[in-house]
Image 1: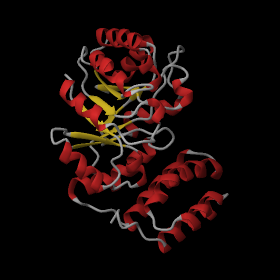
Image 2: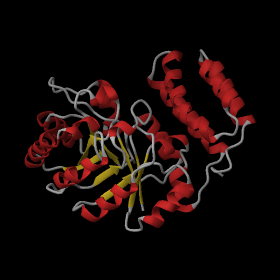
Image 3: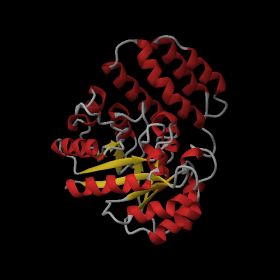
Length: 315
């Protein structure tokens, strides 16, 4: 089984990825938070810093691109190839309202003819591997059969399916019935993404889908950075390693970000997920959220690791 780390805007940038790889070595491929090419044909400094090869040494990284304009995708993919990347990923999964309102991410799924033309243009123009991360529709799962017909027309390196529609966001259970149909009908290799955050969920999935040889994890992996190791060989995380990982991420942000407030914003965003693996973490989470400087923040985090235990379903 191959294990992929799904991108999350604001969290899984190169500082986080490098720290994760240092302490948790079971991820096969990391995907960058989406790059948004513009008509000005220039990457933002944040985007460029995130995909620079020197910031990703020792990592298998695939840049993800978010756009509904084939010209912009072709430009971005061509530029990324110049940096040494052999594969890019098209984001057709982001459910964010601001993204969807512009017809991008999972919003693009509501225009299948336009999407078909988009794919025809990029596959005709590019000699780089292209994968797609998709939801199963904009509003209804019935949309996916037509989308699959379109995907089957093109030689995708793989199709990563998150079996929810856009309006689900991350609510409701993944539609495994649709995924099962995709497994039968897809002409391209499939990867599964969605609700794999505990061993019991993973074990149930591989029991039901023994032919799938790759899975992508996102929110569950941010919550529990050791999740892939647990799935792969029962390597449970412990507080000492989690603390060392946390400190590595923090020191990385301190090095590149100016001011306590901006660093704390990044770390508090991470704790919105990680706090969920600790027993009775509400009081400590509140202290972390209320911290106004790095000293207060570090004291709150030290107290958390000293006083709280990991939940039983994590151990």
